[in-house]
Every structure is written in structure tokens, then in C-alpha cells.
Length: 151
Ligand SMILES: [Zn+2]
Image (cartoon, rainbow, N blue to C red; front, side, top):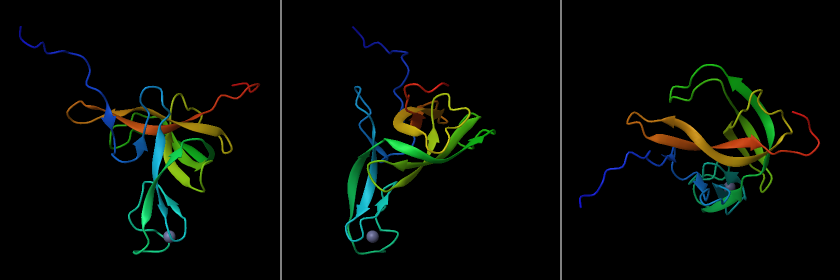
């Protein structure tokens, strides 16, 4: 019997490689960051050269959990050049696990964008399709539900 071509959707692939680990089988995704072995500064995405020390010290790969607090946020009301539909929200998140401020999209139904001080967690969500129709996913931060807070 001949193999049957399926019409099932192709699995999504990351928009950019090397940013995340985990995220499958119910495991929470984690951010792949770099940490300078000289000054301890973190980087995301992971740098090969420390922004503070320059060439020389090793920058180690460190995975960090995706819990954080919104530092700043805004909404964009025009589509992005890579195909992200508008409106969408992005901003900066201060990670809980390390002194690192991460630039990222906010996911889910994030209108209005989460306010500074909002607790968020890392998820992966579809971002856009490439020219071949391949669905690409990306990391995003979504608000953590809190008890007793009205929407
Ligand atoms: Zn350094």
C-alpha cells in the first residue's frame, strides 16, 4: 500500500532559533539567555560577547523560567513587516529569575496592553506565516490570572 499524503497542517516552527527551550508536552517554555562569566550580566537573546566586558570572558548559556513583571507596554495598530496582524502589543518584561529586562510581544487577547507591574508568564503562540505558508511561532508574555481581580 502506498504511503498516504496527509493534509494535516505542518507543525509550527520557531520564528527565530535559539531563543527558547521546552514548551512541549505541557512543559513551560524557558528563555535561553547568556551570562557573562566575568561580570554576571545576562543577555537575551544570548550574546557571544558581553556588552559590558567586550571580547574575552566566556558567556554561558543559561535557561531561565519565564515569570516576570511588565516594565513597559504599548499597542501597535499597523501590521508589522513580517506579517503580524494588528493590533498587537509589545513591551519590556523584568524577569523574576534574574536581573534581565526582555523585549517581547504580549500574547493572548492583550488589549489593552498589560500595565506596568502586571505579573506575566512566558508562552508560545503562533506569530505569522512565512512565504511558503509555514506557521511560525514566537515567545510571548501573557498576564498571570490573579484571584480577586476584576477584568
Ligand atoms: Zn561581562
